[in-house]
Image (cartoon, rainbow, N blue to C red; front, top):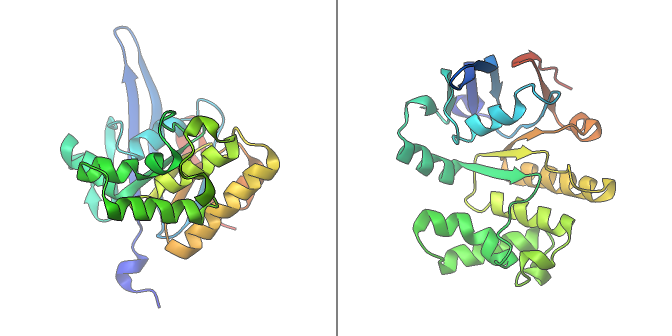
Length: 235
C-alpha cells in the first residue's frame, strides 16, 4: 500500500523560466514550466525543435541553472543548492541516457558502467565493479563487458548507456532521444528494457522523444510548445 510519503511527487516544477542573454539579445526559451512527476512514472516529453525540451532536461539534470522559478526533487529545492551540493545530488539521484551514448571510447563496457560510481567515491571498488557487472548482465551484455566501446554495435552501446545511468541507483533517469539513432527493432528492445527496469526498481523515467510510437507506450505525455507545457494527458 502506498503511504502518504510515497504519494508525494518525486519532482515538482513551478514556473520554471530560462532566458539566454548575450551582448545584444535576450532569448526566452522556457517561459513558465509547471508539472510534476510521480514516483515510478514513465513519462514522455514531446515538442518540436526549439520548444525547450533539451534546455529543460539540462536544468532538471542540474547542469544548467534556471533564470527563475523552482524545481524540487525528493523534498530538496534544487535552485537553492551550491554547485558542490548539486554535483553530489546529481551523482546520487539522477541518471542520464543520451541519444549519442557518450561512452568513453577507450574504456570497456564494464569501465563505462562503473564510471559514475568511481567518480562518486573517488576510485573503482570491488562493490562497484560487481554492481556494474550485474547491470551488464541485466541488459544482456555480460559477454561483452570487457569489450571496448568502439567494438560495440549501436544497440549494444545504448544498453551500456542504460546500465551506466542505473549505476548509482538513481531516483530519476533523464533520457534525451534514447532511441533516436536506433532502428525500429532495436529501439523497441531498448524501450522494453527501460519499462522492465522501471517496474522492477520503481525508478522514474522522463524521456524526451520525437518517436510517436515510443511516446504512446509511456504512461503519460508532457507536451512543450514555445517554452510552456500545453497539455499533460494521462492514458
